[in-house]
Length: 272
Ligand code: THG
Image (cartoon, rainbow, N blue to C red; front, side, top):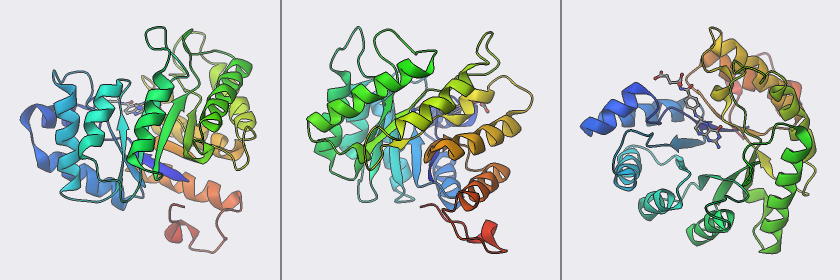
């Protein structure tokens, strides 16, 4: 399971404040703790408060890199912000550009822009691609799979290895009215997306979106994570500091025969 730590995101009040005050320690502590908890990559999202998003992502990347060499997952819908982060990013442990839809009304070629940036960063850098197009986020399974198929096809046509793609079927809060059929649709989409290429593209999601606004955040996250892993999801942007959630990852991997059973399987688990 390729775990991406979600905490360095300006959406969190502690990170937002650290960005405003240029407090390196808060960011570096989060980087270290998430790495120790099993994050293979650290998501880096400046949030919405920072006026200078390009300068802020550079500061975050440089601040994190002073303290650890964990791969980074640059998180922005704006190619210019990703490019700014990449300009100072160390890619020795790989990296991910997060994220692009298939296309946008305002930018027909946005997917190509992200793939171009990943190519110039090197073969160890992947791209998270959303099953979303100029019509927005689809509600049903079939449209999600059709968009994922177009993404895989576009990547293959230009020689971009599908194994560098992380397809994200976009999970939204279950609490939103009329959204309760979405988790099930997403599970069905995951099962089909994994067959779009051989070897399969990665499949990921921003898991915590699902439980936003609910009273049972960790429980909802844990149960859906196990369900999605059982259908073939092999990566997720998650709260790696949630020990119970990490135990679900380890147990799911063991039950899916990705890790050998031993009585201490929770302890020996390491990200693969
Ligand atoms: N797909 C991809 N990238 C993503 C997402 C996605 N990046 C961002 C997001 N979604 C995943 N990361 C988060 C981070 C935080 C929360 C949810 C998803 C979250 N934050 C608290 C909240 O809003 O309630 C913040 C509260 C606090 O300050 O403590 O839930 O889907 N590719």
